[in-house]
Length: 352
Ligand code: NAD
Image 1: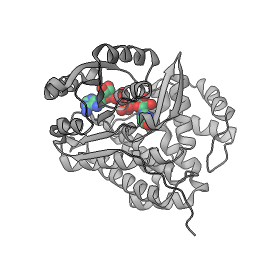
Image 2: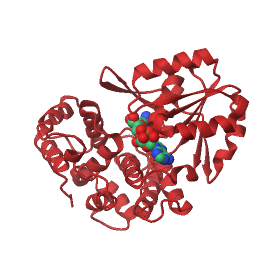
Image 3: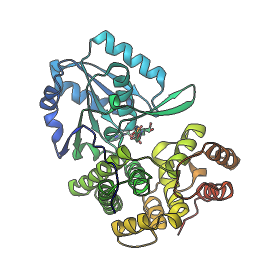
Image 4: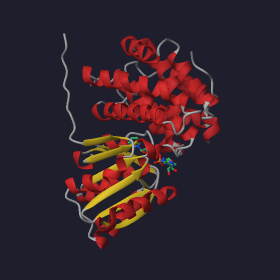
C-alpha cells in the first residue's frame, strides 16, 4: 500500500544545448535589470562572457566564490551587492559559485538565475552549506532555492575528465541515498533510477566524448535528476561520512564522494535490498559498488582517501566524529564497521 508525502519545489529549468543564448529573456522573466554575476576565480572568463551578453542588465561581477562557502566571502559579496544596487544574481559554475549565490539570497532574498557547469547539483536544492571558522554547517530554506536554472550542455565540455567523473559520481550519490531515505517516495525513486542510469552510461563515455553533446547531455541530465532527489529527501551514511571528511579534514568535495560511495553502498546493501535492485536495474547488472569504483579508477579519479590528503591516523578521529552524532541510516552504525569502511576507503580497496 503506497503511503508517502511528496513536496515539489518551485524552480524553472531550461535544459539544452546553446541555451545560454536565452539568458537575457530568462532574466527578464525574473524582472531583473541590474544583476550581479557570481563565479569562482578559475571561471572568470565564463563570468566575462555573461557580462558581455547581459550588457546594461549587468551591474557588476564578483568572481571569488570558493568551495564550502566561507562566510567572510559572503560578507564581501554582500557589500558589493549593496554598493552596486543589485536586483538579482546570475551565478555560473559549480557548487562553489552557486553556494555563494544562495548565501547572498539567504541575506537579501534576491532572485537567482544559476547556470551549473559541474554535476554537483546544488542548483536544484533549498540547501546551503557554509563554513565559518573552519566549521561547516548546513541549513534548508526556501529563500536559497534558485528561481531559474539554465543547463547548457555546451558549457560542460571544458570540465576536465577526472573532474567530470568525480562530479558525476557525486551526483550519483544523491540518487543512491534517495532510494533508501526514510522520506523517499515513488516519484523520487523514478528520478533516482533515471539519474543513475544516465550517469552510469555517460561517465565512462566521457573518456572519448568530452565534447559529444549526446554524452554530455546524458551526464548533465543525470545530474539534474539526481539533484532533484537530493532536494527532496534526507541523505544517509554516505553524506554523513563525506560531510565529516570534508569539514574535519578539508578534503575536496567531489573526490571524497567518489571514493566513499562504493564503500557506503557496500555497507548499506544488506539492509536495502529494494534500493540495490533499482541500482542494479539502472546499471544493467550486479557488482554495483565495485563497478562504480572501476569508473573512477579508469578515468584517473583517485580511489583512495590517502591519495587526497587523509592520514591513516585520521581514521579513528573521523570514526569518532561520525559515531558522536546519531544519524538516520537504514543499517545501524557500528563503530567497528565504520572504522573498517574508512580503512578500506583510505587504502583504496575495491569493494564487491
Ligand atoms: P566547484 O564549484 O568548486 O568546481 C570545481 C572546479 O571546477 C573549480 O575549480 C571550477 O572553477 C571548475 N569548473 C567548474 N565548471 C567548469 C567547467 N565547465 N570547465 C572548467 N572548469 C570548471 O566544485 P563542485 O564540486 O561543483 O561543488 C562543490 C561545492 O558545492 C561544495 O562547497 C559543496 O558543499 C557544494 N554543494 C552544495 C550542494 C547543496 O545542495 N547545497 C550540493 C552539492 C554540492
